[in-house]
Amino acid sequence: MKTNESFWFRIIIILSMVIVSAVAFLIFGPRPERIEGSLDVSALPLLNAVLNGISSVLLVVAFIFIRQKKIDLHRRTMLTAFGISAMFLVSYVTYHWYMRGPKLYEGEWTTLYYVILLTHIPLAVVILPMAMVTLNRGWSGLIEKHKRIARITLPIWLYVSVTGVLIYLMLY
Image 1 (tube, rainbow, N blue to C red):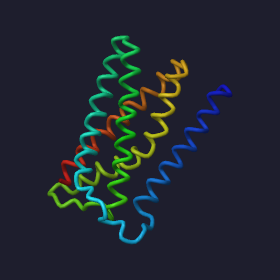
Image 2: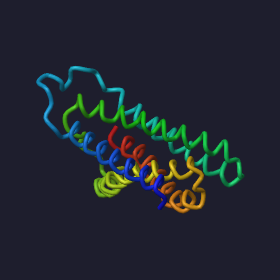
Image 3: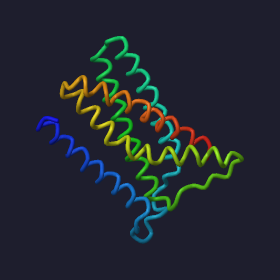
């Protein structure tokens, strides 16, 4: 790993740890009195599902673009997918800050729901640094390294996005 690459890798890991810790704290940590319910966030789960759906479509489209060697379109589409995923993260945290606790699943497919949820959560945590490393390597022109990690990042990112939509559909 070159010096510049290792610098950015460290930044990505630190940033990922800060973001994951902040998300966990904002969801599970103490809140100021009367914050819960002080903002109507009832539309955010649907918005989150829509953002995840858009991200899923963009990831597939970006994959098609790169297979067609349309590198500029691939790059733009991936940056858009990353931006949409960042918007999802802000919306997700906002929802959980103002709404205490997760919504409980009340359907008939409990085992399926928990299998999806318990694979979705850890993969959602690891996809953040993986996506940033993948984007950084592509942006920096480290194409062979970008390709190697992208082959792992894409299916995980797609799984997290699609299962995010499935979780919404199962809960609501």
